[in-house]
Image (cartoon, rainbow, N blue to C red; front, side):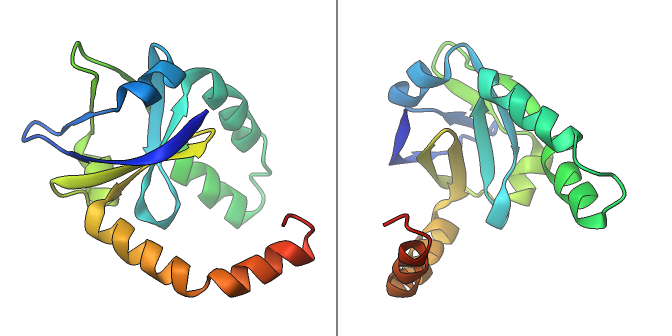
Length: 144
């Protein structure tokens, strides 16, 4: 299970150390791609294939589904951990997520999200301000 929040630094060679707890869950490698809200998603390799197949199966006739598939699939790259547990973040993904030096790696059960630390803190602050209305909506859906 991928849960928790960790702060790490992106090194000058664009390598990011993934916490050992997450590496154990991810196994030998993972798939790194664009995420929503200008973060990056990291999927365990075994979870990526069904997700990618689902995206590839969406109707090409609809603009929204084409766009959504392009966002995730065209930016995807298989990554492996080096001997120090680091992955390389390609320039195109680094720029997409506005990654500077300090980043947050957040576990969200079935995937990781990689955020620029300042953007993550701003996002969390906004989220916390709206937690009551979010809780009400989830309550209406029977989730909480």
